[in-house]
Length: 106
Image (cartoon, rainbow, N blue to C red; front, side, top):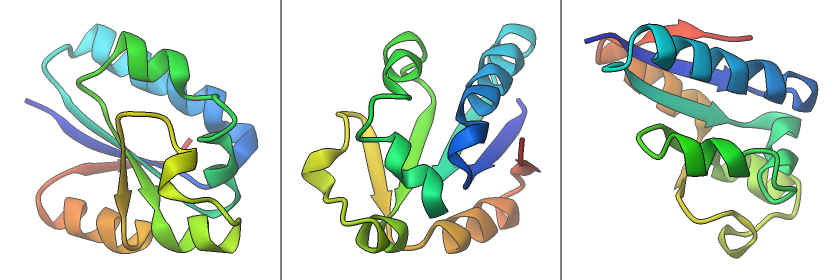
């Protein structure tokens, strides 16, 4: 099984990242995929940009960086159901890479 962490920190890259997730899972359906959203891209979570992905691919873990949330005045209640808040997106990415996850940044 392939394990991939996808790092999204730019709002303009969200649709590309979603396409990457969909294409990866179409080709390798047993993959474990975690998307870490931080930086300015955090604003796309309450805006609904990830809603279809959350519905269509519930096996994908979507992590929101708490530091970025604070910077952009976003609270956990602003996030869609199914999003996991992590203390720091960069720490989460490093931890996942240490667990053998491949790193992808669209």
